[in-house]
Length: 281
Length: 281
Image (cartoon, rainbow over all chains, first blue to last red; front, side, top):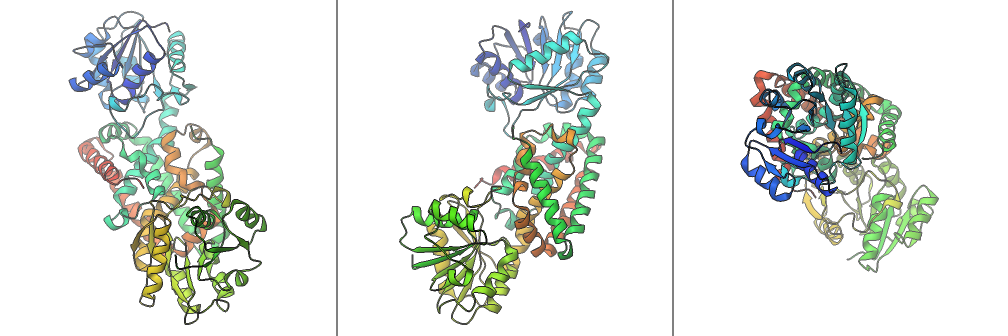
């Protein structure tokens, strides 16, 4: 661990879990936390996720070797503006956002020369929220996508990847455009379907919900503000994903006839086999 | 338990679990099993889910006080035709099907006077399949919907409900039409969305699937033939459910704009709160 002083901006589920994971590995680095709610910061300190509370983002990043933006995606611009003049030469900034094009562009435009930005998307989380749900093992075995661009410093990239690996994560690299396009299909579309699936239920139908319904809609229990930011930031890709789903529903409906019985079964068998062929993380 | 001799037609996950649940409660009734695959019946006998293997449906139901149709929905007609002449006076027939209009109509048309049919939908199950996945506690705490009609014998209805309650289930009554309409929304639509959601993924997207995707699509790992039968039997209601979902996607897309940010958040918050307000079974 080449970082002696870490700054976590936004000490919720992800930010708090990073702190707990580092502490549980007896890491000697000092962790400074900032967040907009004092009660959350006090909880994070009490739980041992951070060592010190900073009064504002600028103070939080002063002297930091690694700064982790762990707020909702919609707050990144504001945070970058508040910290850009305070970062030391050689500091590395990364983030935990679920979308990557915007944060990479913003950071590369705003951060001064000698400060390195590396986009990260640690794909861990939960429908639970806040630092009280933070866990030292949240990242263990999960995938972290790093999103280098042509401007990314190779040494900083390797250091950020080593950081996530130290927390137990597997690493995949994608450019920010591919990341946002693929995640729209495999993460953002499932989330919006879960939310719409809840919305279409009448009360009498919802009262009959079984285990399958609860599995299917679990992710929709997540934070509305956080997901609003993700959806708006990736709206262009998400519209394409929705269009693909509509076309798939057309196809499904065309099979929903007795004379298509064998094709309907083949369709369902194919999805079932594909689902089972991927091991759950 | 007023039943001394039980017949289970179709000894898979549900049929097998019924047998195991009865045995674990040290129930003295004799359980005769029939299924079209000899290997499955041998497994069921070895696991203790049934006491005896019958060579055909007619032999399985001879002398039975309670007959449970536990095959896929699409096989019910054939089973009813094979057993109708063999049932003893006073016998009760029930089923475990996920759709109820067809089986209730078929049974009421075909079964002789003096034999009572009561439709049941024990809402337990799993994406796992077959008698090897059967569990004595599968039904515990889950909901069983009984679907009496104007022709249903009230004593038989109470006896069937007591039977499911003895397996640990809660009971709700619905008429077959309401059952199929509500289940299309809360069970069949989620299943088809899970299947279509898998189908729209490119291989590179699927490789990035995280816990949320696996939760959302878990039910689509279920048996294709079984679900094909359910979808075709409830196709009219399912088309209405799909239309409702399409309209909900329209609504969601209308909120996917920066100027609708507050409404988008309210939409997501509402679904999240509704999801969290229902306790998982």
